[in-house]
Image 1: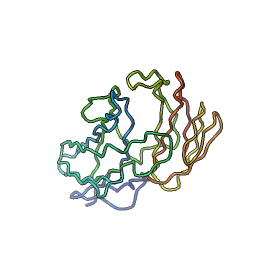
Image 2: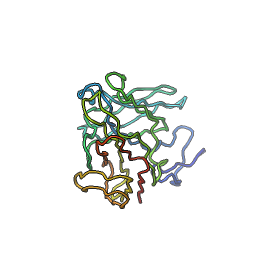
Image 3: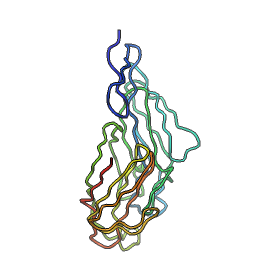
Length: 231
């Protein structure tokens, strides 16, 4: 006897298929990327990062496949019922300059619903900003976001005059049309050029593309309030 209808992992709508007592619907895919860190030394920017996959199902193992990031082959892991597994990912995939990049994002797909957290770096050493994030499945994402960030501060730890603020945007579908309304001027970056304050800028992105936007290094510059809207 069917016990539930399957949800489409991208739209969140019902597919018309049914899940039985012996099988369950797979979870929606997750997207992730290697975010930049405020490091004690430049080489620490490539410290290992990764994701922790938790399987809340008490009877079924979760088979997880991770692709992208320019990897020659996918990473396949099995997380046993009620267990958690840490999966290191290639750590040389962060974007260090403004621009539109490929082969720097990862997508994870499980055959049963899981939760996923990202840690960057995994060991927490050698950086001033140890990041931890709850990853949202793609079907839980929205189409409009407002950026919150810290103003540019002194970069004594890195030997620079300022540590720029930044934001990363990852496209989950091909031909995504992104409109950016920035509260400050963003310097020229390839292939889209400079972004002018309070002037909408549209950029086309494909699935897996990451757009890395850096503020100028001027002290107290802030990109908070930047409006990001996708179709």
